[in-house]
Amino acid sequence: MKSSLSLLLFTLSFILFAGCQNPPEESAELILPESGIAIEDAWARPGRANGVTAVYMHVLNGSAETDTLVAISSPVAGLVELHETFDRGDGMMGMRESEEPFFPGESVVSMRPGGLHIMLMQLREALQEGDEVEVTLEFSIAGEMTLSVPVQSPDSRTTGVHSH
Amino acid sequence: MNKSVLFFSLILSSVLLSACSSPALDDYRDVRFELINQNGEAVVFPDDFRGSPLVVGFIYTHCPDICSFITANVGKVYEEMDQPGDTQFLLVTFDPERDTPTVLKEYAAAFDMDRPPFQFLTGDPETIDSFMRRVSVRTQESYSRDLEDGERMYFLNHSDKILLIDQNSRLIFDYGGSMTPVNIILEDLNKL
Ligand SMILES: [Cu+2]
Image (tube, rainbow over all chains, first blue to last red; front, side):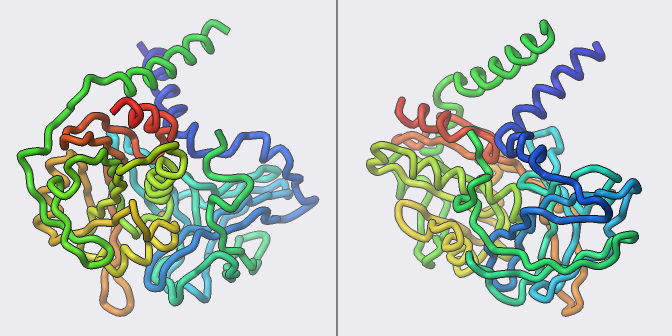
């Protein structure tokens, strides 16, 4: 009984996420920094003024300890949160603030379409392909880092949303 | 090994099942919804589309992650069709309070979809509400934030859907909007 339930869950989650995730090989190419946190391949979707957008990236924690994202800000957004997209399992999808902004030591946490993302809300200006967005992340151990994130449409990215 | 075969067949069978459901899941010939497109033009569903196959996705623009998949998927179905003919492509918002025609127009432009055969539709909240009921798209406020300017930012849990409607306003297929491979929708369109 238990195993058939887990089979079903596995199958469902596979179907739900097969179309949404990049192949796992991609993370294998990422090399952890010797210490602290490094960010790779950050990008933001285009967005309209007063609207919202999502920022994606790989967070590489090369230290031995789990680090915590304690604050995020961006000059282009009135409100910034770490979000996760979730599947309610009843055909409905939603988005919520992540309650676990934790980045385990010697690991990569990927923010990617269909999952974790940095949500920029109340955009002060439109973001178009070719623009750069400043995003500041503050980790409890690694401290503050400011990124310049390119605005890209998923179609123009080689590691696209749909990798079939 | 056996287990992975089982996994695989389960996956296959659910994909196949979703593609093989019986024709005409619903019939919209008896309904009439007066909507408005991103150019501010009145659009009547389904009357204005009779005679054309329709691909319809449901979105709200305060949803940059999952709804972007739905919008992009609808766009890709068109881009990958050999002969789109007069097939029409609609994205209908279930958040009419915020998604005005102007907002939808900017949203469409960001996807390079502010052009025929795409239309982004909104309407008055009562019409949208009854439309969503009719097409079984459910929404529910998930959480909100009070903003400094006194406004309220809210988010919605919502059905993840793309519908395929035939030339006679009958619902032929009902897909998971964000995760259905475009080629499955293409195959079904080609059967119409
Ligand atoms: Cu979000």
